[in-house]
Length: 270
Image (cartoon, rainbow, N blue to C red; front, top):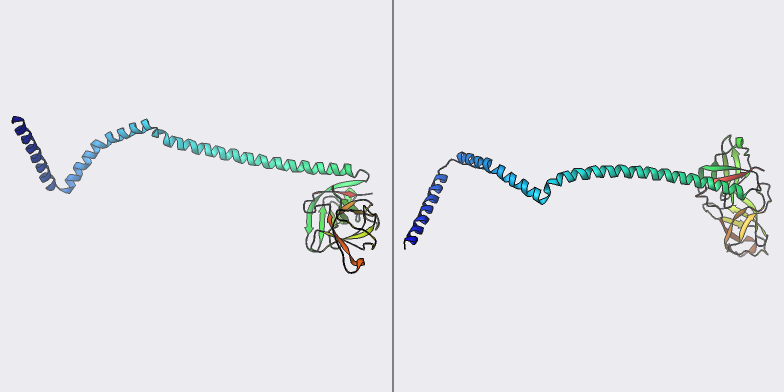
């Protein structure tokens, strides 16, 4: 009984204290309340910050910003290394291309060792719908003259039409104004091969009526006409087009030389 009375007295006391606090707060000025709140925050915040710091250290979060700075530094270092590698790769590609060009020139000289030649590089191309002309980096100082034959690794390129001291202009066999006297290797039949306007194919005309043209037959220069030596490869027959009049039939020939990728040539000087 005594304990129950004591507990009831404590509850009444707590209730009275709460009521007094409520009355005090309701009658307290807002500015004074803010002052009390600020003072309370001043006392509590350092404790709270300390607890947060300890918590972060335990969780490993204290190294977060340090890790970000390290990552930024590593990223910049990797960017610089990547730039250096790209530069080295470009230099290696340039060296590789130069070596390939030199190798091609050496192979050309060996392949056409029977001729006296001057090697040159294509420095300009004017391949349009109406003409196909190249400019090479050898000229009269190198012994090059008009009407000299120009060849590449795969076959005939064309002939020189004009020269300066250091350069030469070459009319290619795919130029629409070009005409070359040729023979079909398998049958020795004579034909005329011309460039075709707006086409990379050649056209074989003046085909003998008794000639038997077969796709994939090889075509080479005949040696007639005073410009091209005999036996230089021109290309291969791709299609024979028959007409009502057999004398008008013609054949399409795929050039052996890929003029879009041509870089190295030889000029036959003898």
